Image (cartoon, rainbow, N blue to C red; front, top):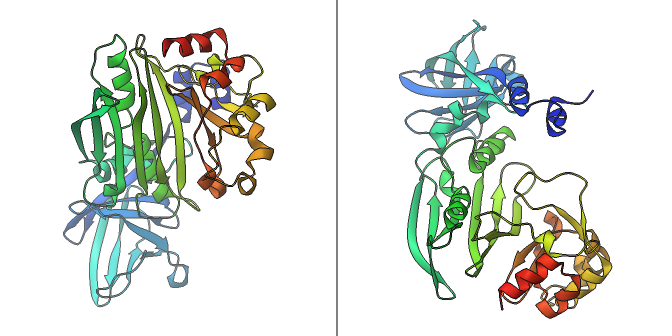
Length: 378
């Protein structure tokens, strides 16, 4: 039987119905630790593994089951330099109420928490919900300043997370065009979507939630910069690069491109600039309005690209000559020609290099649409 999500992708059921099916009821907990207001969530309510924060401080503290101390005891992750390790001793459950004692050294405080119902997405946890994460994420700052690229004025827009709870490790920069072309307003809205909005639904909020759900109390980090590499009367081409940690074994580094049509405001698919057979694609359908995912290059196009590889990386160590046709690629636009960047795994990400194929060398691989793009930049 196909999953609800798979059926929705095939168009066999309506997307809203799928959303209703995958939504679940769950709960977070609010109450008092001594005379201090706190909010808590549990990944596993039976084992009392979870996270809490003092509402006035908004600094997450992990709770891990302390099996050696009994089934109803959890330890605060990391302990404390003042007074030693803190433990939570839970009284038997009473449905929507949790009570017990918090102990550290010779200090004992009572706690009482009341359940707060929250909607829960499929494959998610209460610790990733808006109700729990929202207060931790709120309060970032967006600043604008004038900038120029090759003589063209634009606005550099920067987000810095609030100076608490580790969210100050979320820093995102993007841009806004001076709205002089018909599509510039739509382009600016698309680029502004990269700026975190302080919600759990935004990509930055999801990263923070995943980081905590994967065993940490930290909210991870995100460093992202969207910068122009071409601004012409018709086109905007940007590089989107950075690094993030959202839980797991290692950080994620990324670099890619996006190209926008300043007449229509739409993001364009650079794959359409190339003749059939020049590029290979994955079997799945891309989301509407997004470029097709490129699975590899033809032998001839791969050789043309290698001829313009700068040599700053040792190709043999990177495995590039043997695997160039099998890498996933993103394509951007420069005045000199299309620019390619491979999407490399973490272990060889250092081999990432942007390669511009000059228009003269690229021309044999260009479709009529690609040649029109080339002509528009002359």
